[in-house]
Length: 81
Image (cartoon, rainbow, N blue to C red; front, side, top):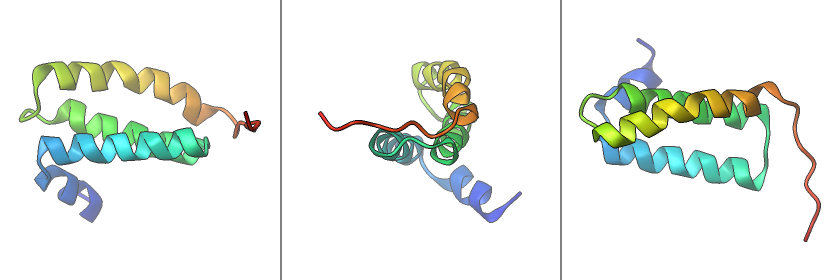
């Protein structure tokens, strides 16, 4: 197990969910496949954490496929509104 995976395994479900929301916000600010890949890793950890609320686990598991589409795409240029 990598040190990052070990730290994630020791974090509380709430901390993991908060970290996931943070990374999702980073993606919204600057979309790129690498950040999307980080979101996927966070979602996987939450979805696999038996301590997490069942609904949170289900939602995170369902979102992994959708985020995989972002991870596979090239960076999106955003226009100012």
